[in-house]
Amino acid sequence: MATARKRPRPDVVEESQAECPFSVIHPDPNEKEKKTKRRRQESEDHPQPKILLQASPFSPMGKFKDPNNTMDRHYQVQPYQKWMDMTRYNSFVLNGVKYWSEGFIFVANSSTIERQKNPGEALQPRKKSDDDWVARILEIRASDEHHVYARVYWMYWPDELPPGTQDGKKIIQGRQWYHGANELIASNHMDVINVVSVTAAATVNQWDETNEDDVQQALYWRQAFDVRSMELSSAELRCKCNRPENPDKRLFGCSNDDCKKWLHDECLIHEALLKTFKRLGTDKPHKPTPVKEEDAGEGAKRPLSPSESGAAQTAEQSIDVKPEEQQTIKLADVENALPAIRAENASVSVAEPKRRGRPRKSEADQAAAKPYVGLFEAVIDSDRSPPVLEITDLRENVTGGDKSWTEPLQCLICGHEIQ
Image (cartoon, rainbow, N blue to C red; front, top):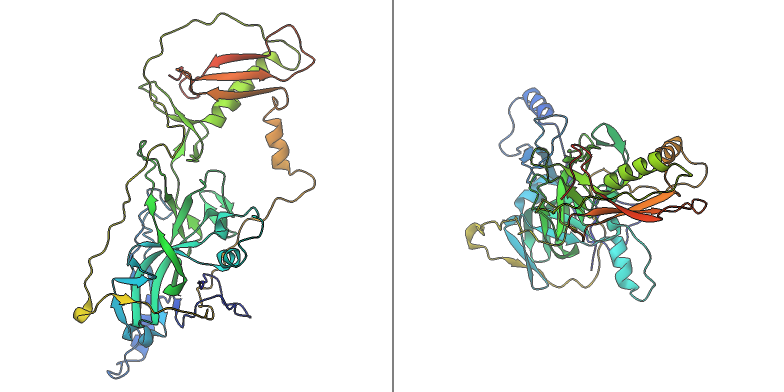
């Protein structure tokens, strides 16, 4: 299997990468108009390459700083005439599998090829960005069955977010705490790839965070990354802390009809432990108090796992309109891997591991914000109805009270007991 690249061409080309003679540039259409006026009349025999506009197939629910940002992008494929002379297709067949324009695909990279070459090696911990890349096909062109190419938009793994990425008011790099394990980020990073590097079709759904029943099983995306401004679209904010949701972690919904807010489980635990520390400190034992039992009603509760229910695939297949009765092109077998394709000059970086040494000031502030660490711990027992907090006293020098007890789960915004 050959690979594609979405990074600049290296000095030494790896043998496992598929040849692609095309690259994508993004000229300014306004600058082109000025040059055209200076040149007066274009020659009919030598027309100037056209600057095309790619309408973005992605419409994120969140917003960019610029409310008019659509992620549409002007582009040219070079060499222009060679690209335009090829026949455009709606689909291609590789190893018996049909791939459609507008569909999502997995694309091999050097990491996946290396694992295929050495299947017996011990598995090492790796980031999602070490897996196959994911792309959305925008256009398919071919000169014959040996030369088939796809113009694509790359989907980013969160690990691949480069330094300088704007996430709201913050400047970030790499995966953030709210990104789920199967989460991708849509982008307008365009490339042309040789389709022999495609490994499989991918199912990628858009996650609508405003739909409380929309829980994803497959790969999904909610944010978009505009490579021109290095900006992420916003994510839906939850809880008292006004932070996004990590779909791999639990949310609890307030059962108060006047509130109905979703709350992070870690925020509920944090607030409960702060109250416990404020009440008991480092030396007071917990004395049980009678708990009034109330009938638990049916209330809204967030699913315990984002994989409990699925969501239907939203992507639709394009209509197969073939020019001049062209049949779907089928690829010939490729025995030898070929040189790498060129890509847009936008290197993708992953987050560096945390350095050892003295803790940063922010880490010290975070420790001060959790004075209960080492003294108390808590978990939420959601198997009960209503769910409760189970608090454990870790202080070995304190006697005369309970070492574990339960407390009702209360909304951090309205104070209502969560049912």
